[in-house]
Image (cartoon, rainbow, N blue to C red; front, side):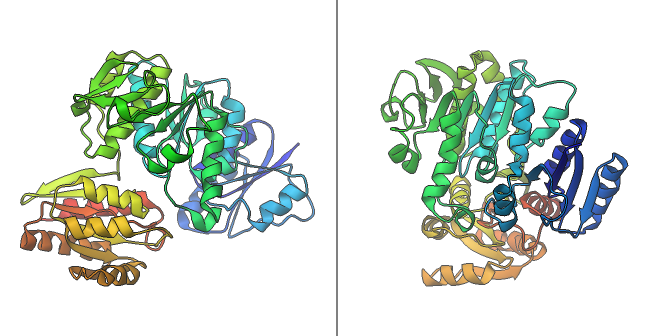
Amino acid sequence: MPIAHIIGLGKSGIAAARLLKREGYSVTVSDRNTAESLQEQQQQLEDEGITVKLGYSLELVDTLPQMIVVSPGVPWDAPLLVQARELGIETIGEMELAWRYLQSCPWVGITGTNGKTTTTALIAAIFQAAGFHAPACGNIGYAACELALSQTPPDWVIAELSSYQIESSNSIAPRIGIWTTFTPDHLSRHKTLENYYNIKARLLRQARQQVINGDDAYLRKNAPDSFPNACWTSVKGKAKLIGDRDGGVYIEDGWVVADGEQIVMTSALRMVGEHNQQNLLMAVAAARLAGIEKEAIAIAIANFPGVPHRLEYIRTLAGVDFINDSKATNYDAAQVGLASVKYPAILIAGGEAKAGDDTSWIETIQAKAAAVLLIGSAADTFAKALARVDYSSYEIVETMERAVLRGAELAEQHGAKVVLLSPACASFDQYQNFEERGDHFRQLCQQLL
């Protein structure tokens, strides 16, 4: 019986373990953590005949596995994985494993620095409105291996793919590849911007058809030569398209236009911000490449509720909107979030800081934020950055509880229209993930009297 070892007891690791067990492998899952929630998962999986080791890191001694499957959080150049590859052990990500069992279905693969989740959710909604069984998977929705385990195979796989997932998945070749945006991110892992770019470009090169955001400055400059037949999109009209101007998707007179045909009015989308109009264009482009009629597109867009944690409206209290943008985990996403809401705004920011250029973000704070409330381990760093540009209306409040209460007070004092959580940071200093952070913010806002 072949032996497989799964590193990481998250959603993707559990699904990979169950898939390999079904395929006849002897499966062990390990995780360095020992949290109570993991212990519950451990018991459940062991009842299914899957060995689970908590508080454990794999060492390649004695009996070696034939396959190692890693969660996205494990660096691809970790010494253990380098050693495994040198020993000839097949080392892959969960997404690659899923592809092997789902490649008979057409895939839409969505990647990019920002905008992936909204674009993925929009595409899934449109395909489903057209009658397809087209679940979203990857960073949202299901783990991809859960779809491979399903009794009902999907008609289309709509997969959000981070650079981490692409890096560990050599053979994924979507029917349609989408590149939403490209700005510096994850450089502590990928080391250089060129490495980061090339990882994402590989997914697009392996796709049969490409959709690329023509309003992204970096992609507009660097991608045209690599993707001569791509469908480009622009919120700025047909004249701003790259390449075959009759084949692009753009906005004109308030309409989304594809191949010269009016498809849906932009006002049908309830999500605010120009960036969401760009996400809409890429979703429409994917739908048209898949042959979906405009009637299904219009129905899906009109009924699309938005994405949790991405400029998610929570409530209005005393004329102030509370908005959850917890998914804004870097400066560029947070800048877009703040630029998209009414102002003056009270901004809640902070968490575990990432490398990146904060210039545009701070300029937007100066223009739109009446006050900034700083939480988490980045609070001191952000305070110094704001002080350097003579922005003094900030407070270090440390916790989300204090930030929400103080945000409501300051909104009243400043006549602010919005209290916005848009952290510009990862969440791991105080929360398991950005979803838990956003859920906490939502709960606190709903408790305000």
